[in-house]
View: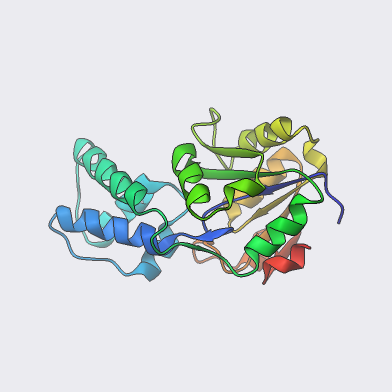
Length: 214
């Protein structure tokens, strides 16, 4: 396939961020006087935002918390995560080599529901920012994935028509965003798909290794 732009999801697509998110979550749960949750559960909760992950953990532990309480815990979680954003997170295998090859072909952007400031911090920490001309995270646009606006905004900033772009993600959220925007979509099999078989999420293709993109 020949494309004029590449749009990448971040968590679960470019970088395995679950280890640091899990540690931040358990740090927050400890402050709330609660026990840990296993990282395998965190992997199922990543992708819908920090608040959803926190609420899922509280529900799993059978605890209810008020809105103001959850606001406070969310702040604690984000602060801890920001300070330890790349302690254990790493790009998936062949990501760096693939990004280097694709960047020589067409401009690239990150399109994620992770807040833009945290996205930039993570990309900088892992020396991935140099590959991307645009980072569109939560807060960059009025709407976030699965709404098409982030993908459309990224392509506008890259100067490419959305129908000539390829979106690379890991979940149904990415598929819905790409389909609504009008571009091709490839899913990485080993990302954060919330326990759903990526072969049945409606992508044009599912890849087992990033170098399949080259």
